[in-house]
Image 1: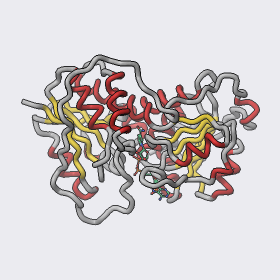
Image 2: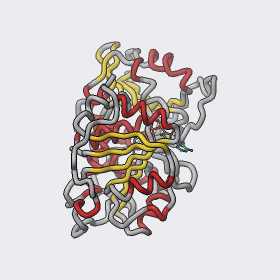
Image 3: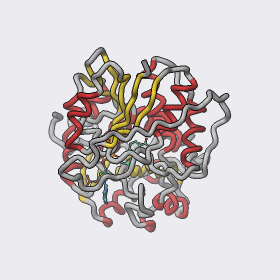
Length: 352
Ligand code: NDP
């Protein structure tokens, strides 16, 4: 029986994961199909119940469901639990296990962005959704001492800070209101800027004005495209990276969880690059905006990519915004980071 793996999001039509995962299944000789399921939030419980069936190997979960899916799985791994967000589901019989492979993907991207520099200790994160939770957890476990989270709806950023209360008790994790002047003043004290909003995914907008960006910044945009934010950051002389490495490595980790096999990384990266060249630009679907009260699509969109003949691994192709620009010789964090690793009490109450 052909096994099924589904990507559940709303919408998902432009996801790049299909090309990457189907090619990986085919190359590994695994009889499985990767399907894109566009399901509105109201349809999520029924959708999750459906994947308990024997023909399903597991699922990916994407924008905007990563947090909503948490109470629908039977157990979570440490990272799923710590982040309060699930992007990958595996099966134990009919039981569902929630994982968060975005954390591993983010850490690979962060390492690539930082390059040979000393790992910074202060970061500004824009956004407070499922992706931002993986970013914040990744930064905390990398030893960051100060993380400031800005979000359009402040209460969501405050909820994120509350969630990480205990995990972040040794450092300073703050939610701040989205005001350009506050963002500018925080950026002046930090080294790492991560965009985990979906601004720039479907439009050529940037979450912040270009003139607040400095050459010393390391800027990661989770969106898999050369967004306006990244172009502005490059113009300011900053080091930049888009969401490709994170997407690739979260997908590779998910593949390993579903199949127990080593992921064919180079092939997966090649397929991502091909899909991108073919005009797809979103990392994981399109931003959903305000959610409709009823399911927008109850019929799953099963756009299974054509079977691919296994290909030999070729060296990964990189695009200008994919690889962090060489940071060798760039100044150490000390100059750019006046708070210099001083630990402070967490601003959030004890964790959930
Ligand atoms: P969520 O739906 O959970 O969160 C969306 C975030 O974007 C929220 O912080 C939301 O703010 C903000 N946002 C959306 N529209 C606007 C707007 N018009 N103005 C201001 N803020 C806005 O999505 P995810 O966290 O799952 O994904 C966020 C982004 O990260 C997406 O672009 C996704 O593709 C990317 N991503 C990439 C990954 C990769 O592997 N490269 C992995 C994970 C995510 P508010 O709460 O106020 O609505």
